[in-house]
Length: 142
Length: 303
Image (tube, rainbow over all chains, first blue to last red; front, side, top):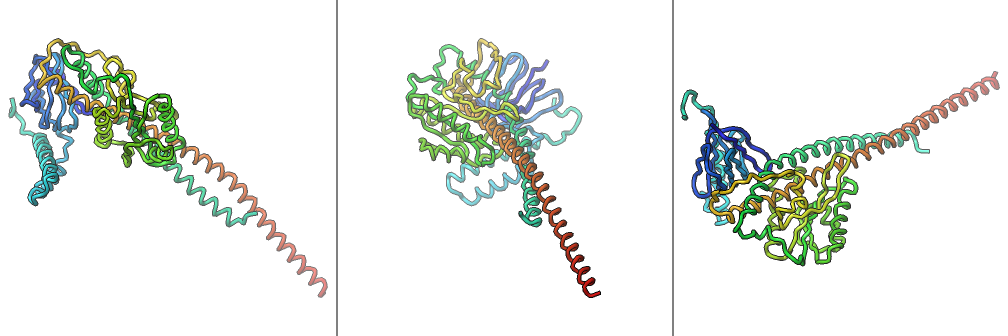
């Protein structure tokens, strides 16, 4: 028995459909949500949101937001978010290299913080994109 | 009368002009659609976020969040006016600025302005209105990140107590031929007075799911701290998109008029050109006839 998951950002709806389980980056640790979870509202940090539907895994990069768990559905309000298949892996890789190069050069504190943030974001996007690659078939995840 | 060559040159230049205005008309029409699609796409988020706010703020024993607190009396007001960076859009900018200043005159407290768009800034500047900030260079269809600084400024002014109310004045897009300047409240947010907010257009018939016992992580206050600023940004974003759709629609209409005028001018010029050409032909024929006549007379005289 699954439940309904909605993932929305202010700019668009990323996903709406039935899933079996959700793993979300809660502000106070990872949140695993299975059917019949208690009603919950929590802040999300940046991280990967994974939804499982049968053998299939859907992955989203989320940069902060909010999750609401209701008896029959789960709503994720992401400040900014991307679906795994939308992530431009090449661009993320470029961004990662740029951020790393900047950090090598011992920049000013402000610049350093910015580079670190860019780096974290790029790593997250790459991780999500990686997951989206065609998976080996036959029962890898269960 | 102008010479044939001059008239031909004018026809060509009017033709080029009409081509440009026709192209701008088409471009504006497509931008209207993009802005409209973007504003419609905010609907699911607006609905869900509002649901969360109503849920959180209706819980008993939770102190009212500063962004939700109405202040009595209101001693100063901040008005954010959405205008365009570029002209060629008819009375679009003047209408929205006039709506803002008319509204401000009726308030009996000091009003300060934030101008979004160069045109609005210039008009308010000339009116010597107290302008505390201006934002320009927004793309044709703004993204959320483009307007975040505007929302931040509004929240800072409100929370610092420099303004007791923040209003948004922008042009509401009704359809391609109709846009209307409106005044909506941005801050404070009030869960029971939704109809005064920008978001009211996108959230109707809201019945929040009544769930008795939520687990709040980390706490209801912390949750509101996250949701309310986002929601405020969202409303500014919706206003900016409405304004963008209206701007492009106004420009489309202005360009349509310009194209029509150019075509009318072309019709007149074409008639003028034909007359001039006919005139030139007649004159040449007269010359030839006159010449032939003269030649004939000379031959007669010789013979």
